[in-house]
Image (cartoon, rainbow over all chains, first blue to last red; front, side, top):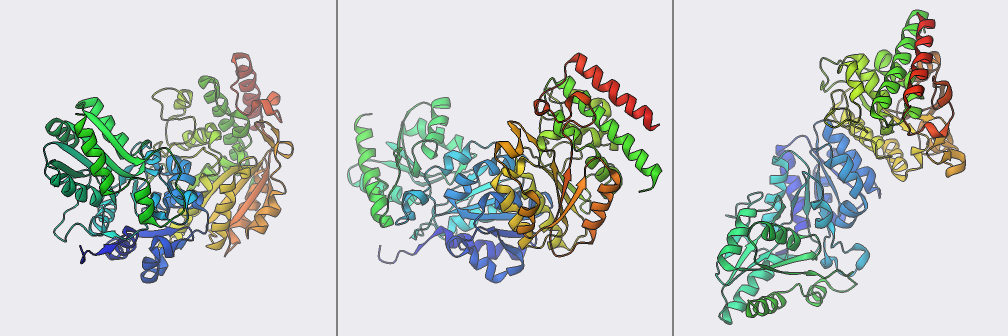
Length: 314
Length: 278
């Protein structure tokens, strides 16, 4: 474990934008006074003429992005998840979603791992909010490699995309050969007793949980669902049918996020028990990110514990 | 303005009003008051000002229009129909299931440049369009119409700050100051006045105009064309419900459709006005 490379997906976002700007002349970036934090500052440095700071005014930023998109630009509107999905929700819904404009929203600092800033900035509701917008694509990458390819995938498709990135440096678990496919889940570990479906930084925790469970003689499949919408119904149902039990793991509220999305598919098409791990209908609080993740049960240990318990009840 | 042109515009404005009444009557809902107060304005923009072509509605070099006060879509639809974007008869389908003419503007309707209607949002989109024009070095203009009640929305002022900061002199906002909003007079509900001073403080060039006088509108838009380095707002003083006697200055006609008798009376009045212009 000593040589694990760690990197925050917000860094991947800033780097990917800068890379893609060479290929896509109509790509422009908007930010709301958080360029240093969202890492769009990397883009700004390379392409100052294509970067527009909107100041601390996220609602207008989303509207400006919509207007730019009607004129053929590919705007990346960037801010924290709380302000992108939360504060600007109705503008995203009515000015971007309803007209189905080609706006890409880069939402960083998602989830509890924002850390010391505390509850007002720890957005555990963004996936839930964005999922309700018809035609919105939602991507929650697990690591640097996946995040960069997700940004490319977003620019290659037509229509609104919500990309969710983290503040915390997380292990790079994919290698350069990894190929991101929008809407397609990835089976990272085979298993037959139970399937752990994870997203974002919980994917690595799920992989660790797989090893812990293996030591207990439990064969846990691990699936990475990076695209929350449209979700990979086929793979989820296959896992439900083959393993008969699903545990979901996300750094998001258990209301409306990955767990809910999986449960919706499963109850509709392939009913088995779905146990959700996430933030349990409560606010976060200040503290170091890694400690908070443990406190909120967003850890490999807790995934292994919950999974083993659920399996015992099977 | 040349008198034959003025007469022609006055006739079109009258037909726009008839379209507003036709639409809201057939929909049994909608917003006639604020539609009637912008009838001259939209007529002037679509028949006397904007560089647009119904045969080529997606032309990237065209002028753009965003109806930020989207609830007055009946006036926009009437002017688009008269301009030839779709048949005038379609106005009767306003707000009906399956109609292209939604209660508030949708970008999917021919001739509509942006979905709007949730107040405060249209001006941001218009600013984005103006910024795109600057980035691309194009010379098109972007026009957006706001209500005087609408400027109570905070997003409007975020957009004003942005447009001024980026020197969007290709953006012209028009505030339709008819003085009324749903709950009453704007000065009594939660006053946004002084509107002109607020725009000035945000770095905009401010022009005032008489909303129902084409000479005044022409003068205002001519002045707007000369301004460089900052966005322009034209605050037009208007009469809500203008052109239909019983609707004029009546807050109750903000969002109510005429019944059969009221429809007939309104059409009679407008037909008389039109005859007077022939």
